[in-house]
Structures are given as structure tokens and as C-alpha cells.
Length: 174
Image 1 (cartoon, rainbow, N blue to C red):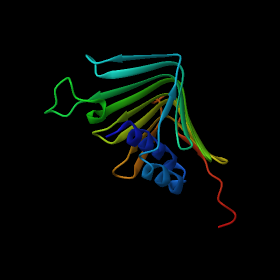
Image 2: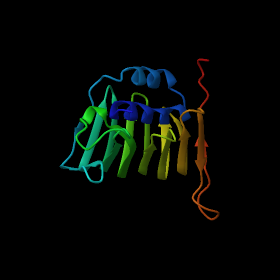
Image 3: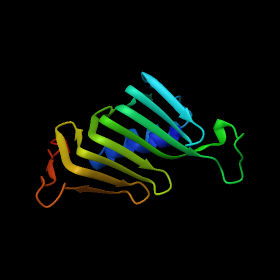
Image 4: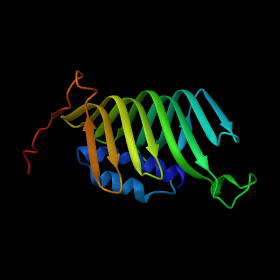
């Protein structure tokens, strides 16, 4: 899976509160360039990762992910050797840490950390996870998206922690 597909899948966070039409449009645009800006980038062939740090901003077709640090973990196909070109590598996992914020026309998600697991096809937003769309809002310690199942779970921190909270405003036009 390409980094483009990975970032497109992260958009599915918006499905918690609707906006599926915007997400489908981005997922279809897999050839659009991804622009990443950061204060520093460090690539490690040995660890098969690329770390961006310092006011990281990744964007693609109206999707913007901001974080203090973003790491892309990749893997080569099993039959490949170390000389395989970058375009044959596949993203296995992506993490974003520190002041994570995801913006897409009409909705915003935020938390302390985000992880995308390619093989599990799962996105996990943790640490005061919040998703807004217009006036609608849902919060929890952890939001898990099961991409293939179209399922999401919002969890509280612990027995003594804050409960999951949601505020939804019915659309008066419907």
C-alpha cells in the first residue's frame, strides 16, 4: 500500500460523524501528490522507517495532518532484496505523535497520537481523542476505526476516567 493510500485511509476518521462523500473522493485520488513539511527528516534503511519531526504537516487534496512527529514504517515485498526501489516498498504502519490534528473540509479530529496499521486496516486515535463535524462532537480516550468492517469504537480511559461523550445536532434540513 502506498503512502498515498495510507493517508487516504486515515480520512476515514470522518466516518464517525458522516462526510463519507468527501472521504470517497480522496480515496479515489490515489495519484495525487503528498506534501510533507517538517523541521527534520531521518530515514533508516535498517529500521525501514522515515521519521519527520518538528511541526510536521502532511497534506493531500484538502486533507492536512499535523503533528510534532510522524513516522512511516515500510516493508519490502518478501522476494525483494535491499536494492528494491522505493516505489516497490509498502507502508506497514504510520504513526503521528504530539498535538495530532487532522483537518478535512468540514471536520477536524485531534488527539495525542495516531496509529495506522496497514495489515489490520485499523486506525487508532488516542489521548483525548476528539472528532468534530460542524457542531457535532464525540470524545473519548481512544477512537478505533476498523476500515474493512465500517465499524468504529470510542472508549473511555479507564474505570475512573471520563466517559465517552457525544453531542449531535439533527440536521434541520432533512
